[in-house]
Image 1 (cartoon, helix red, strand yellow):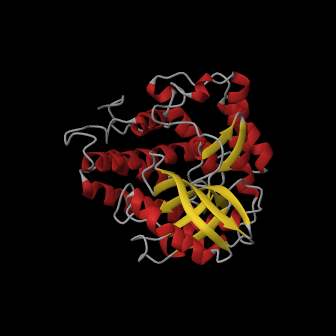
Image 2 (spheres, helix red, strand yellow):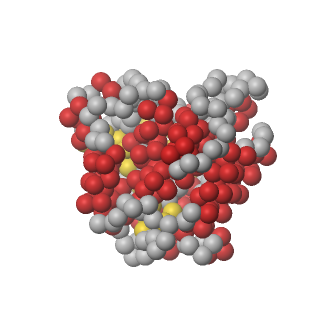
Image 3 (cartoon, helix red, strand yellow):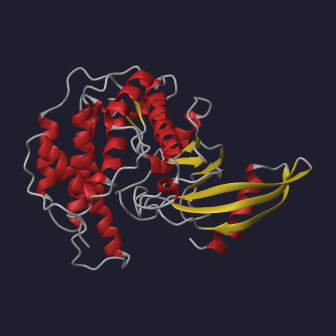
Length: 361
């Protein structure tokens, strides 16, 4: 999708959704870059509504028309997630309409408010450079703790009352964990078909399946719980974004993902963790106090998270090759931040996956 097409077609659709508005135009239309899921554009909606001219910063998200990092995307589900979370205490953006019809833009799309603030970068890692690294340690601490508190708040939600029962998929397994394992088995096979086999990922997933925790609680899980999906003004969190991976499961899985990813982007690749961040034990204690749940299965979910991340990185590698960003003979699919973390976590549980340590080109 090019900028001119968006500028030409979107105002008419907005007029249909808001018939009381006139003089509709888009200003400052631009692509933010980054991300591997949805095509995203930022713009200012200039309009006169109910007699009052105004300028409203919005985000336009278009569903991909071909497989990217994942085999399929459900933009409608992402929109429903944010609709259900509105007013729940989770800081999601205000929504401005969803279009399921592909005729206008070639794919479904939605509009949401553009949140002021900035998110910590992952490429290069925020522990290496950028505004978060340059922040005072006290501000780093506040930012990390707000992230932990949002995970805890998600865990406390009444997912049934909010309409998230659709996330239960008993055809895939008897429990949310069994369903997630089945999903990743299927996903891993799909990733392998694109490039090459990854026996160490199968071995890791076999371990996950063979050692399930007992008597797990079931809550709503964000699924992509990380600092990179949070927006901040100063040290204040303004929004939690990207709900495409929301699922039911043990709430500690979100904490495991957040801790694993921070580890993968810092210590796992030889970068010191940010000095203001509370350590793992402090983070665990805060999450337990805020959520009301035990983190007894944290180690299990950190390992599972590393396996997931390594699989996603293998898929991203293929996407980069296809786009000409990496050569055909790259080893990034087996030597990356995800596999670096997975190798360390596997040693901690006494599992030899045969991974070559390090990050490759």
